[in-house]
Image (cartoon, rainbow, N blue to C red):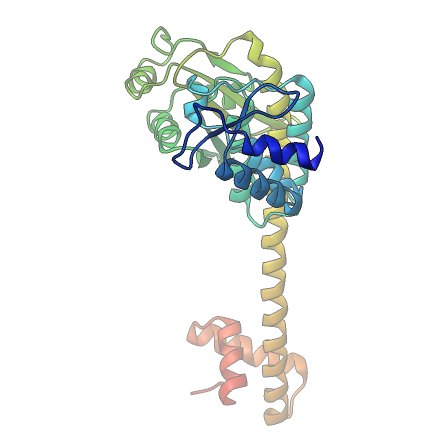
Amino acid sequence: MARGSWGRSVARWTAGGSTDGGHYPLTPIRKQPWFCTVAYRRRRVGRSSANSRRGRSTKEALSSVCSRSLRSRRGAVTVPEPSHEELDQRVSELSRLLLAEETLETSLRRTAELAVALIPHCDTCGVSVAEDGRVSTRVSTSALAERVDAYQYAIDEGPCLEAFRTGTVIKVTSLAAERRWPRFTARATQAGLTSSCSVPLVIHDQRVGALNLYSLTRAFDDADDVAVASFAQQAAVTLANAQTYQHARELVEHLSVAIETRDVIGQAKGIIMERERCTAQQAFEILRSVSQTRNIKLRALAQKVVDTGIWRE
């Protein structure tokens, strides 16, 4: 539209137009009446500027995916379920999370948030991890999931433990009608849960945990199987890699302490060698003998020698 035509259209307010600073009906030439507000245009400009500056990092992409609320799931806002292509794209992003994150909890929390965002009818979930023969919840998306999981561990029964112990998916379409774990189902239905789906996380035939999905509104059905299976596969890799990363980090810390200890002991040996006119092996034997006699750790004794030059009382 030409600049002059636009100016004439803006000046042509209709008889029913608002005069309170709100919506102003405009009648552009060649088009039907439409509505626009200054505030609306400002919001649009602000969003465009923000979007142009916003990077497309993995963390931001996951944040946008995980922004679906429980309110939208209950029907207040219609949110289309992800297609298979979208699902595959999103779950593949899990494999890029691990090396960039610092802790096991961080990786697992993002895994749980992504599960709630992508798996239909999933309102909350928890990630159970097996460590030293015990299963415990490392992260959850709500206090409800954490309480329900904790109750299963306390009574030693429930779909989470069943999935972990058998290595099979345990899908309960109706917790109210389930009879296998009466104490658990009574507590779960009392908390408002309708159905659950517990998925074992398995890597190289080793069960490393379980993903526990819960719904407040409807049952998990066969249509959800593709999403659950695809997500569980990536979630298992996430958990295994995160554990490997954590173990590697702990090993580095232990090695750093060992190197520092070796250096301190070496300095202490040098002091003793100079004072006692002895060899390195003899200096180490002196340190070890004093450590055992006085029941002091070797590193602590060596540090005292370095700081004070004294190793005997």
